[in-house]
Each structure stands twice: as structure tokens, then as C-alpha cells.
Image 1 (cartoon, one colour):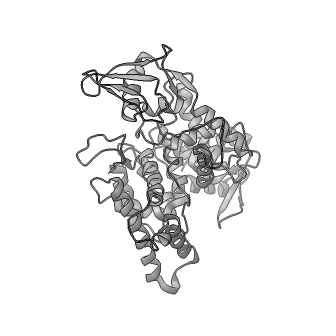
Image 2: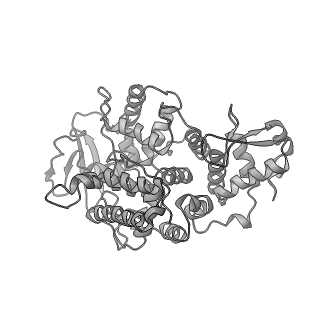
Image 3: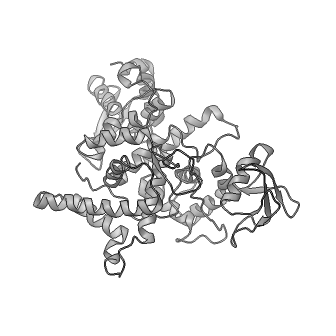
Length: 450
């Protein structure tokens, strides 16, 4: 598989839950440009107190107890003290047999309230329970967890370096709106439950870090269970493997490939580690690989379980899913990660029961995607393809990202009075399209008939 120079640098222990980025997305839609203001608003949203109702006592109680965020009273009456820095040391969780929660109470006699992010992570639908960010709304610095989440949004291309929403960031917002629209006003909406928007997230992950993720997925297919120490060893093995790939290529190795290998080694701290007495992986290695593994959990390529299938949502323990195995098979036969993304990502992300695009009518999704993606400067084609493919996924269909792009390109050739393509700032193919929206709507979705 060809190295393309796609490497995300600086991933850390705060960049674990893609749901954090959905909370940040809501901030970026209203505020942009000022890092301190954005980080403060994000911290306020994550730490907003919510009262616990009876329906959530079980999930919240287990979460607080397992994370040692409060005092735990065992069935025999013995108490387990909270962690010294626990943010809910005033709360008590009374446990029954097994993981049954009898009650959650506040020692001060107040109603039980916890942070918004903890309430969302405690939800039984959330795939992983790790990754909560400790946030101090009074002192937000460049080293705080929320500031690192802003950096993550830039790394993945949700926000520009000037901290404004990018075209792809707006596409993610559009997809999230469409998914949440039927549940408008419902308390069931949880940003940490990743639905059809996982296709947009997966695209962002591969576009920014495809060289590492593609090789990581191919290795993960062969494991039955991955622990924290195994993950660190795997990260170091990946760096060695990529270095050997470039060495075998010799003078034929591209500048992008050599830069990826050198950047990945430096990012893992391997050059510094060689000067130390021990060759054991450092905490830096774990920070870099854990962000990637937890992101793969959120998009459905990994699950938090042991080799027997027992849930391990509170631990750093992973098992490959059927989607990861399909991804690995496709990646091994691809020339480069971006080629696989265009051709196979949508069908790989989709549930196995979903019909393939050749057997279904997706012209409505393509039509809706154009209408939703039109902005002051026209249509950003990659963003349109992401919206179209995500809408199809949400509606139980599959349309590939490359196919969506090709259908728009074909329309521009056949009906130039409706769509015209234009080159952008990067790459060799068209990046934008100008659309005569009124003419498009007059014709309707039949304009995308094959």
C-alpha cells in the first residue's frame, strides 16, 4: 500500500471521544477565531450540571462507581472512598448485588447533578466510557484538555487554523442536523452516540492519518484482543514496518513517504527513546495510539470487549469488529488509503444488511446533498459527497464517495446549464461546483438518474 503522506501529529490523551468534537461543533457554529473564547464555551458546555432522573440512576451510578468519581457503598455497608481529586466526592452510590445500583444521593441533601459529558458518557448507548475531559471554566490555557480538543478539530479539518468552520466541518454539521432532526426536542440526543455521521468522521480520520490507520487496521484484523501494552508494542511495530517500506523503495521513495515515516517516529518519541537505557514504550507512545484506537471504536471498527466478548467499556481493551475485517480486506487490495476511501469506505461503514448502491435508487440523496451543500461560493465537492453518502447511510442505502463525486461530474458534462465544475487550491481534480439551484429544483431528483 502506497504511503501518501497522511499523518496526524500530536494526538494525545484528551483526543479520545469523537463526541467531544460534536460538542465543539456547536460552539464553532456560533463563535470563531478566538481560541480562549472557544475553549471557554466548550468547557462550559461539557461541565454544565444536569440533574439525574430515576431512569438514569443505574447507568450513572455504575459510571460514577467504576470511574471512582464518588463514594461507593458496597452491599455489605462498607464504603470505598472516592479518588482524592474526584469531582463528585459529595455523592454516594449505593450498590446492590452485581452491578445493580440501589441509589445515588448527595451528602449535602441537594438534588444529584453531574456534568453534561459524564451524563452522556454514562449512557449505555455510548460505546466507550473513557475519555472524559477535566475542564476548569475559570482557567483555560493552551495546555488544558479543552484547548487540545480545539487542536484536534484543526488536525481533522473540522476547523481551519484560524478556528473557523471549514467546508467539511459544515458538512459534518449538516449531517448531524439531519440525523437529530427526527429527535428534535427529545432528551435522547447524545453527541457521544455516533450514528450515520461516523462516515464523515471516518473520512476525516483517513484523510488526515490514513497512512497509519490503514496499516493499523490491517494488523488489528489478526488480533483477538488488544490490551494497553499490546497497543504500545503495535505502535512501535508500525513505525518499524513503515521505515522498512521506505528503505525497500530506496531512491523510488517519495518525499511524502519519507516524511511520513520520519514524522511518525518523531511523534512517538522513538528517537528520544533510543537514547534511554530502556526500550520500553513511553507514555507518549500510548497517547498517540490510544487516540487512534478510541476513534476506531467510535466509528465502529473496534469494540470494547475481551476475546470472549465480555464488555470492557471502562478499560483500554479492544476487539476487532466485522467492519474492521471488511476494511482490512479492502485496504490490502488498494493502491493507497485515499483510493480505498473513495471506493469502499461507505459500504464498509454500513451495516452488513444494507443493500449495495448498484441495487438501489440513490438519486434523492444526491439531489438533497447538493441542495444542503450550496453555499455562497458554490458547492465544495468533497463535502457534498460526504453529505450524500451519509444521508444514504442514514436512510438504509449505500452510495460511495467516489460514486457521488462521479455522478455530479457527469451531471456537469451533460447539463452544464445546471452545474459547472472548477479547480480549487489543491489536487488535480475539480474541488468546487457552481450550481444553478433554481434550475436544479425545476428538474428535481431525476437529474441524477443513471
